[in-house]
Length: 342
Image 1 (cartoon, one colour):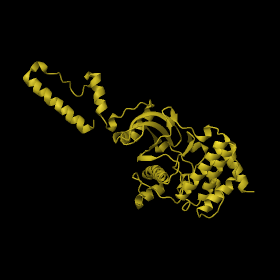
Image 2 (cartoon, rainbow, N blue to C red):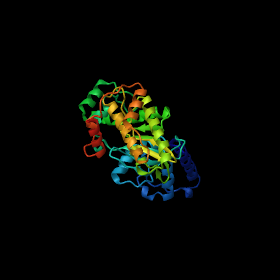
Image 3 (cartoon, rainbow, N blue to C red):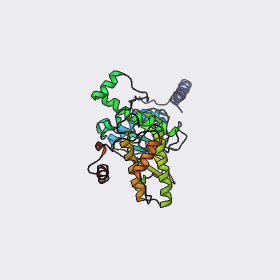
Image 4 (tube, rainbow, N blue to C red):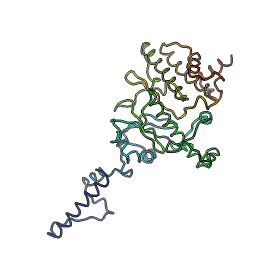
């Protein structure tokens, strides 16, 4: 029952009650003042709550700490009100940038479960080297439209408080629009349903017990590893054909479920044409993928694969991996730096 239907229902009850009270005063029911909810019978409160589909009536199953509860209500309230979700069941993934929650789908989604990726408050976000990824790419507003207003662009450049809020929203909108593009192209990515100012709603990979594991959490037999390696490379090629480089691809953000893979986490995608570090970032993605599959018994030449895919899409080879993208504390990145300086 929506809000209007509930209103008409209670109005009809009130009118009937008034007629009865005129005919027989003994039938009058005691009316409690509206500011004294403690005296309302518990079954009545439960019924009233079930009729409240506004964000203020959003109560979820997941037991969150006080701050997290406020964060979820603020981020997901609109999705609940517009019937994209009906409940938050559990948190399935936590991270520095965002957390992912398993949610019961609302009537707007033809599925039982959906995933809500809720970004952390801007003050807690610590995206490393964001300028490397943002170079050359457009900024988007909360509706996914390209920002052309000079005042807004200036605020983002200066990183004023207003500008930081715009940048935060742009990351979310950029991820959502990229997922839409890739999903339409047939890439193995979650289907994006809608976005809110601080969250993205997408298809859920897994079941009621939890989210699908990442490749980094499992071992594959060699035959399956070969099949999934080829599928991953095909996805990398599909992304590039759409003008998209993942930017942070590894076994940690490729999910495995029932013999299939799903690529996730796209806030750092870059354009192969607009970003001067594009080739370096692309090579790093391919090298990390090949490194995982080599441990599963699939040997390959990562640099040749990266070059072949890159040039097959008409992009020229140039530059080496940008040193700013390497982590001096990561042994793999140190080896990569040594290899390109031989």
